[in-house]
Image 1: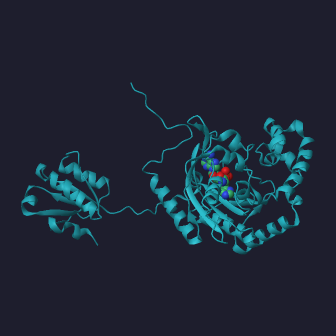
Image 2: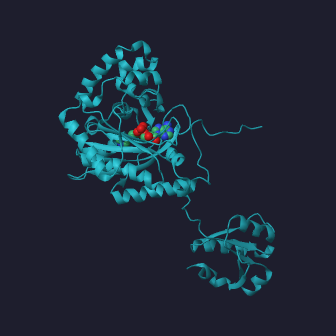
Image 3: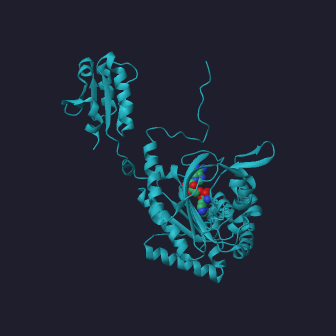
Length: 418
Ligand code: HAM
């Protein structure tokens, strides 16, 4: 027997009964972004590996453990994109997308690839939508992006969620904090996991979002990053909080929210859902004021977020997604062998005229054709047999009432079109 193939571990087929929910979600995102003034960008599936090493950071989990990397013709190292901020900034610099003096507001809906251990809400190929607002250093921009994430999730039918917010300062305040944190953690070295002991050397701030209960207890007494912010960072943070208060967006301050990607500066945030298990982040983002310059562009502040679509679909209110109205369908049924070719041609003609039409190509009996019409929830059937062919008409049957009306074959499209 030949081998039956399965989809690869951590990947998911989106089957026909699920695609309507995806389409409603995607359309809601497109409409929302249009209203908020964001323009869509699409980037290639793979990029030079170095782009991610230099932006996301070589010690981050994404770069050190999760990338799908391969050699092109045995020479250039390429990587399937594990995230979209770096590719979008690469394109922003490459095509000089910067509007003269304005803020460039971009959004995307796309597939990403990370070699993670698959579990509920965690896949190896997953989809995100997200935005990048490039050009403004001001707290209003942070508040706009965070509010966009929150309101869009609400529009998608997420009822319960928590927005977590932090400010991790600029590079130099982070260096100061890092030293103090290392000193604090060194006193508890024997109680830290192997991973955290490694991370002290590579990326100590990441230890702050450990899920290990013992480490969490230790960290309760750890110094707070907020105490190491300089005056400008502190002012920026306070103003972001004030704007969110004014906009009615509820948040929780979480001084341990450092995020796993290295490009962040100042504001970081996540929105989590109690409906998900361990992988509870619906969305994550923050400011990355140094990234454009680090990737070779002019110094340009920026902030963005990305949200995981599979997780949103798990967390959202089911009812909300039934709004894709099925188009009223018409079924063409042949009541005699001789009518089959007329039915076939008429079916295609009616589709060309803009109608939603199905017909039989299995040469089934009239009875089973009408059964099929009911299965497909068709509203009407057009039935043609010997007599109708001779008279140049079709019987239009209302499948609800059973009522039947003869209609001229020449005018049948007009009969159905509004
Ligand atoms: P991230 O936190 O790595 O951020 O991912 C954002 C969201 O993508 C997560 O909150 C989660 O919902 C979803 N996600 C991440 N990994 C997986 C996975 N393996 N399976 C399913 N869903 C997943 C970023 O990607 C940043 N680029 C966000 C950003 C944009 N920051 C600034 N601008």
